[in-house]
Length: 283
Length: 305
Image 1: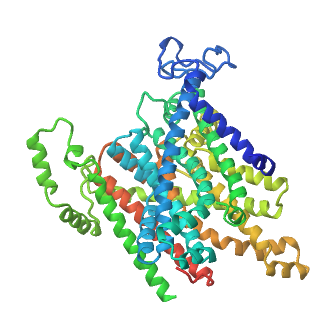
Image 2: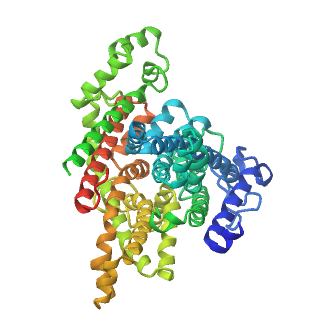
Image 3: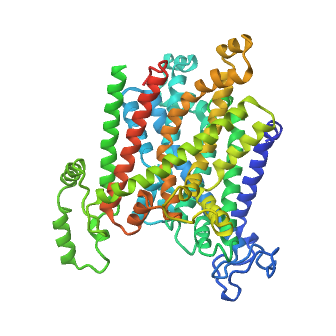
C-alpha cells in the first residue's frame, strides 16, 4: 500500500473512493438515515438539504414516493458491488481456466476455446444479457451468471497469450524435463505468473460490470423492486427530471464516482504489478 | 496471403454458425417456449395446439435445422406483436441504428486522435494530464446517465437540441455523443500509447536528425503508423457500440434496431428477438472480418493468424 501511495497518487485516490464505497455497502444499516424502501407520501419530492425546503432529515432529498434518496444510494452500493464482484470472480475463474488450457495445451483445444471466445465477443453483450435476463428472470443469481458471460473472454484471451509465452520459458521447460505433470506445471508454475495480469483485469472488469448492471437495471431488468439499485433509481428519476432532478443526478454520480475509483485503482495496479503492459497496451 | 484470407473467412462462417445456434436456443432458455409466447391464461388445449402449430413438439435438432433453413432464406418467423415477418421489421430500422453508430464512431475517432496525439507529444505535462483525465472520466461515466443529463441541459434548460426522435442532424448530436463517450476515452488512451511508442522508433529519430520540424515528424511519420492498430480496436469495439446504441436508443426514442429489440424483449416477441440478435451479431462478425482483412493489407508485417 505504501508503494502504491508513493508511486501513484491517482491510484491512491481510487483506493480511497473504493474504500468509501465498500464502507457504505457494508455499513449501510448504520449509515442510512431511514429505511430505503419506506414510503412516506407526506414528504414526496423533497429537495436536498442545501436547497430551499430541504432538511437534514433527508440530506439528498426524497423521491416520488417519499423514499430517502441518500439511504437508497447507500443500500444500492450493496447490489452494485455484490453483483460486479461476484460476476468478475466467476468470469475470472472460467476465463482463466479456459485461457490456461488453450495456451498450455494448444492445438485443437486452443482452436475450440478461441472460437467460443470469438463467438461470445460477436454478440452485443448487453443485448444478450437483456434477452437472457428477460427470459430467466432478474434474480441476483441470474444477473451474476449473465454478467460473468460478458466478462470471461477477456481473461481467456490475455491468459492464453501469456501462457503461450510462458510455455516456452526455460523454467517451465525445466520442470517439464523433470517429468512434472501438466496439471502441476499449470497450477504451480504458470498460474502464479499470470496472477498479476488477472488482478488488474479483474479490477477493471468490476468497473465495467457495474456500468452494465446499472444499464440493465435502468432498463428495468435489474434486481427486482423493492431492492434499491442505482440503475433503477436513475430510471425512476427520469420522469421527474424537471421538477426533482436530484433523484436522477445522485445515483448517476454514485455510479460515476465508484467506477472512476475502481478504474483509477486498476490503472495504478497495472503500473505497479504489470509494468510490461503498462506502456504498450493501455486499453 | 491467400491462406490467411481463406482461414479467416472459414472462421467467420463457423462463428456465424455458432451465432445461429445461440439465437435459436434463446427461446428455450426457460424450458417451454409455448408458455412464454402465449398469454398467461392459455388453456392446456390452446398450448398443445400452439406447440403443434409451431413445431415445438419436434426434437431440438429438427427444430434447429428448420430454424437455420428458414434463417438463411431470411425467414425468422412472424412477429407475435406486429403480425409481420420479423426480418423486414428489423431491416427497416437498421439504417437508423447505423446512422447513429457510425456517427458515434466517427465522433469518437475525431476527438480521440487529436487528444491522444497531444497527450503523447506533451507527455507528463499539463496537456497530458488533461487528456488523460478526460479519458478516465469518459471511461467511467454511465452513458445513459450522461444522456439524461444532456437532455436536461441542452433540451430542457437551454432548448437548443431536440429531446428525442429522429429527424435532421440536430437529433443525432446527443445520442451519438452519449454512445461515443466511452469509445472516445478508450481510443484516446490507445492513440497516446501508440504515438509514444512510435516516437521512440529509429525512423522517427532519423526524421528528427534530418532537421525536420517536430510538427512534421509527428504528423507525417509518427501518427500514420500509430493509427494502424486503431483500425482493429475500432472494429472490435463495434459490438460494444451496438450495445451502447441499444440503451441510448431507448432514452432518445431513436427508431432503430436497439429500441425495437428492447421492446420485443419486454413483450416476449421471440421471433423478433431471435432475428435481431442474429442480425446484429452477424454484422459484428462480418465487420470484424473486414477489419482483419483491411489490417492485413495495411500492415503487411502481420502474417500471423
